[in-house]
Length: 151
Image 1 (tube, rainbow, N blue to C red):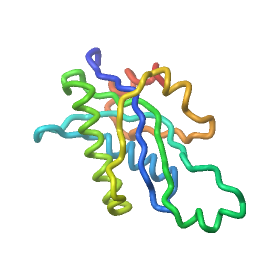
Image 2: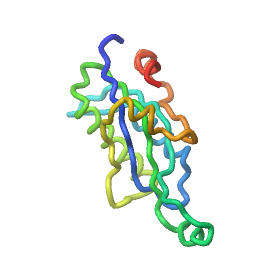
Image 3: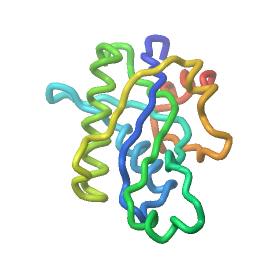
């Protein structure tokens, strides 16, 4: 696919205390598989890495901290067909899909997930070494191939 939109992005949200990071990544990636806008659906591909954004906790604080919500993040790339409109529109469509997936799995967290475009350099420089890789399974091969050079 020669005409593709590749958007470097950051996703962050609150998760319940016992949420699993790998499951969070799978939810994000699966939510991105098919996006919709104005009643029309289109394929997309999300690839990146997920990680916790927790505050540092001393050992004596752990019992209290285990009952608190946890902040999770993802840095990566969203690929969509070039005719899918603007980066702003595609990100809004992704935000809607991720919000629905997270609400279906964890219930209402009180605030929608933050999904926004960032610089490509920030994805490379700010992704923690310990982050877990995620990507949309069974995505169209052309979207996967145009995204690979960015990863």
